Image 1 (cartoon, one colour):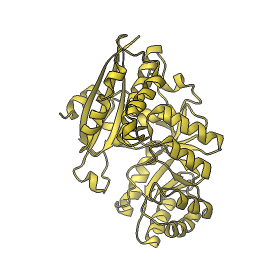
Image 2: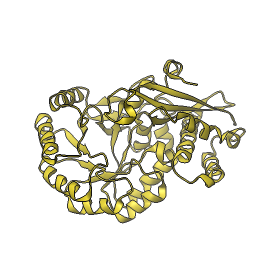
Image 3: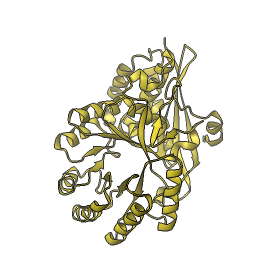
Amino acid sequence: MKITALRTIALSFPTVCPLGTPYSEKGRMGALAVFIESDQGLTGESVILAVHDRRVAVHAAMVQSFESLLIGRDPTFSEAICDAAMEDASHLGSSGATMMAIGAIDGALLDLRAKLVGLPAHRLLGAARDRVPAYYSSGLWRHVPIDQMLKNAENIIRHGYRAMKMRAGPGNIPEVVERVRRMREAIGYDVKLLVDLGRRFDVAEAIRLGRELEPFQLDWIEEPLSESNHAGEAQIADALVTPLASGESVFSLEEFRHMIETRCVDVLMPDMCRLGGPRQFIRVAHLAEAANIPVSGHVLPEHTLALMASIRNGTYLEVMPWSLPLFADEIHIENGFAITSDKPGWGHALDPVALRKYAVS
């Protein structure tokens, strides 16, 4: 059993939702599809979601730079392959584009291994469950007028979700509180509500806002500060009753270990793409489990669902539709849960028609 080829396809595709941010002004997103072929006739696939499409070529060059480490290797030796890749690129550091490339390789190898034995990825990893609580993460952006946001929330509930996330701030704290109040009144307390502050507050502002939001029984407040300000996160977590979530912009296992040891947040949010793939995601989850800290997967739900179903301390799966145009089918939501697929591999395959349509040179 050997790896015979490594391929990539650079992609630029329309955004599913307006983000109201500078990098989305063109209305397009970028991604890199990664494929690892085997002499068994099966191919493993993964995706690097690049958000905007200006640097997809960087990701492609980084992934392709590892080709010589893969060809001829046994794909079931994924730990050895990824360790070799990390050693080979050690002079570039262990974060950023380096870890995203290695993570894409690890993801494609997991998909390939699961297909080789005919199992869904979550069962190959050792499934903890076949469904994961999910929240919808689009449509409730801070730039959306309140009346439209409430209509969007109704639509989210109609699609089977029992949890959703809205964005807030910065600026007028009473205005933020009013938007959350209106949302809570509209959806009631049976539907879970989360609020993402988008790394736009300082410690004092976040504590003040968090205390004013406590009557609305939020499941968590997310990323009030810069992703590296863990000391500030600890101050906020200590001051609030509402749980604090963070971690989507953390690129290393070592930094997650520091966050766990200092208990600076109540919920960790590793991003499989940024962190370095499935193996790194699972490692973070196990470290967090030992400290009784829950983990929530961040974006790319078509792949993250399998990882969340394989860990015992997984809380919500974030269903962000950014990657939806690239896949052949949507995640099935049933009474607030994302249902795992029985198909071998990730269970959600990239759509060949979409790949041809959105491919760029």
